[in-house]
Image 1 (cartoon, one colour):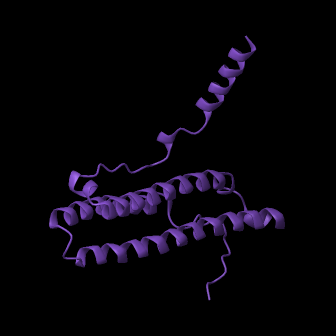
Image 2 (image 1 turned 45 degrees about the vertical axis):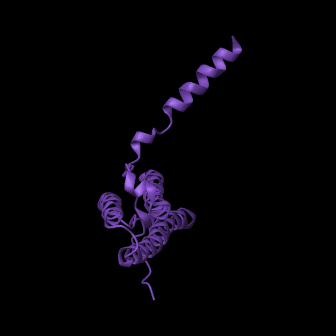
Image 3 (image 1 turned 90 degrees about the vertical axis):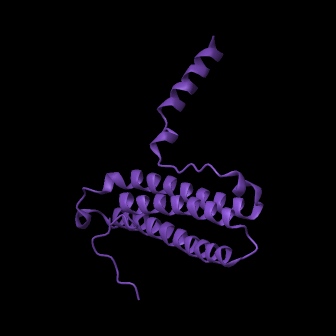
Amino acid sequence: MKKILLFALILTGLASCKQAADVPQIDLTLSKALKGNATLNEFVTQAKDNANTLARECVNLHEMAQEYLEVDFDSLSTEEQEKIVSLDYKYVEMWYNFNVKYTSQTIQLLEFLKDESIPKEELIDMSKAMAQVNSFVQELKDTYGQDLKLDPHPAPVQ
């Protein structure tokens, strides 16, 4: 009986946790031609995984920031202000790191497109898949932004 009760409590706890459906996610179906090319398949899969990881991190950090969105920053203690600035910095840094990966992916994509040994059908399928990933990332930028804007007095970047 205790095991059943414990199991029920665990299930209830898991059910109350954030569902995967609450996090935006891109799910690509790769064509046979793309699946046949291990390099392109891995490239597209990695781009998709990077975008999905970014989405999860955006949602998690936005949830952490919710309690600070309506506070008067200047009335908070120094410790609380530092916590808010740290969270804001972490979010901006997350986007910066993603943009570095994204730029290297774009360069790699251009290299693939210049490679004449890759069949045109595979290049077209890869381009379509990457366009979907790019659209998803743009939706994340439009929805969540690249800055939480919690710090009302950001220091200028030098």
